[in-house]
Amino acid sequence: MNLANAITLSRFPILFVIVLLLYAPFPGSRMTAFLLYLVSGFSDWLDGYVARRSGSVSNFGKFMDALSDKILVLGLFAALLTLKIVPSYYLFPVLLILGREFFVTGIRLVAISRNIVIAAEKSGKIKTIFQMVSVGSFICSEAITFDFKLICPNTWLVCAPYLSAAFYYFGYTLFVIATVCAVESGIRYTIKYRWLFSVS
Image (cartoon, rainbow, N blue to C red; front, side, top):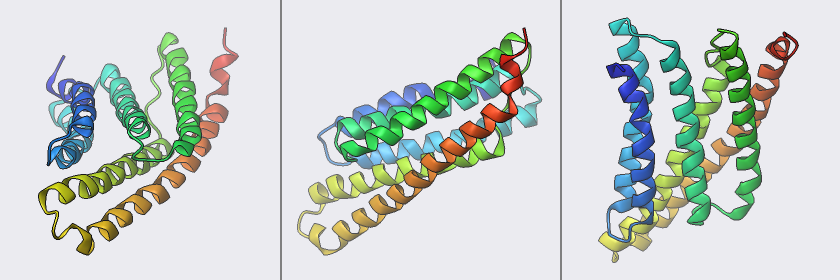
């Protein structure tokens, strides 16, 4: 265990705190969840930076960095669906993304069994960025809708609904792009590493 890996693993408890805040009824809970989400996104860059600067890059860190991103994003998508922050028809693309993530993780595990570590590729990183910004946009939209209405009820109707809608549809657009990227990168991984399943 080193500092970089500790930063990576911190995204697991942050996920649960964010979900609890999204369920909380008090004013400011959603905005606090959004700020924590920004912290988790920053930690995704920070762990790699610390690992490179300290010379502590490890196979464990590479694997857990990719895995923690997937768990954070998919866990929050599940929470957004449960809370009806996003409509139920999002379930199919979320399941599609979930299937892709399990499949690629399976490829990585097969590779690890042969002492090969598959680091995240550029297409997968781009997909993750779209997913993370999409989730952040949905949380921000909910924060504006929920918190602003409770804190400033007299001025809420002036601009908040339009701002909330702007963040929501921005997140929706990125979510569609992320789903397409997930399918494309899943196919790319399958083609590139298909030899792993034919090696005895």
